[in-house]
Structures are given as C-alpha cells and as structure tokens.
Image 1 (cartoon, helix red, strand yellow):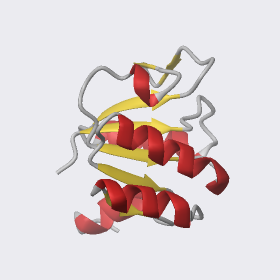
Image 2 (image 1 turned 90 degrees about the horizontal axis):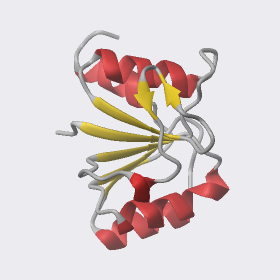
Image 3 (image 1 turned 90 degrees about the vertical axis):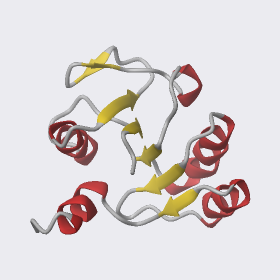
Length: 124
C-alpha cells in the first residue's frame, strides 16, 4: 500500500545496501525521498536532511541506521505522521518498536524491503 518512501541513511555510494535498495524501489515505481544530511542528491532524487523537511505524506520510513539511532528516527516518523517504520536487515530496536506501536504505526525490523518486495511479487 505504500507509495512514498523516506529512506533514512541513504548513501550516494553504489556499494552500500541503502543505495541498491533505493535504486530497486525507484525501479519498482515508488517515490523515494533520500534522507541524508550534507548530500545534495542520490540517484537523481533531491536529498533532505531530516524527515521534518519532507512536505508530503510519508507512507513508509525505511531505515538504514544503527539500532541506537532508531528511537529518534521513530519519534521523527511519528511526528511527521508516517504510516509505517521499517528497520532494515540486521537492525533491531525494542524502543523504536514501542514508539511505533504507541503511535499505531505498522512496524517491521530486521528485514530488507527489496527482498520482501521481490518475495511478495514471486520473483525471488
């Protein structure tokens, strides 16, 4: 159901997982907004420094940050009214999960959006 994805921790480096996941999501037709301070653009999309800078509804906040940064990202996601919070493969945060649950947000952790999307489409 998600159409607009804010990708927190997006990287301009093609070797980083966040870069390849962002590319995949763009290729699948999602609107992806990279959240990366001090970077102007990634894959042709203008970067923002924080979720608060996004001036449109956010369906999914896709997080490529260390676990200890996730509670703050969760609070920011709640503040902007995002519908869901997704922590990428290897990222787990009990506190972020609790913040999302209190706000009624959908929540996923320790999963890759690209892998799950491919599996849902039957193309793994």
